[in-house]
Picture (tube, rainbow, N blue to C red):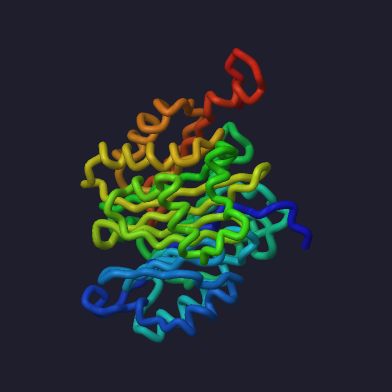
Length: 351
């Protein structure tokens, strides 16, 4: 299958499990590397770097990231990977550890090259059918929805399923930022220099420092990787059991970057706003979307207040309720710098 360019938009899967004694046990972290490799082979990606602490393990993949907690797995992959094929083997390995799946959440944006996606990702309809057929019957509270925006290439696809309607942990929130048409000067920083004689870890560290990514969340333990000839991935560990992750496809014409982090509704919201600002400023995209998943309406109200002062205008807003996940709020923004690229003095209105 001919691929016109690399697909930056990730598919993201989050699975929660329960068992007899999940708190004190290592749980899913006991899945050995050989078994993990079998899962990732089905998805069509590999582990390229990893870091962990007492709470979870974080893996940088050849196509994005994997996070493993005792009772939770988050895996996001880009390109033409077949992410949903990880579900069956992960359920199998969890079962062998005495764990049962109790919640599933699948999210993604609109693919830049949708016709290049293989089964079961050729359409959202096909993805939903695959999920419906793959997930166990105890996950009886299910919902699938496409959250539309005024920007046709920035819609948000959500599927959730759970054995109960309310989220497992109502204090946590997830924010997923998708950015396109990156500032060309900034995007060049994610290209390797010819004959730089660095390995991918060293190249990744250089990109982290050169772009200011290490300042987005001060004090985070960063595991980074610079791809050859271009591209970048990082996982950050901070505040014990929190993670952040960034992935960059810098090629002109289909440039893309994502930023994701998890937080608590009890966090300092000013710090959250500052983190979001820093992440967007690293890339200065022309267009971005922000999805927040939370049981509280507190988080999404900070998004526009953080982004609009950077020269963006909110173009659309959508909210929906999902069983086992809570509220999903999806907002899209475009940058006012676009008019300069057209050489005009007037503001070019998008959407």
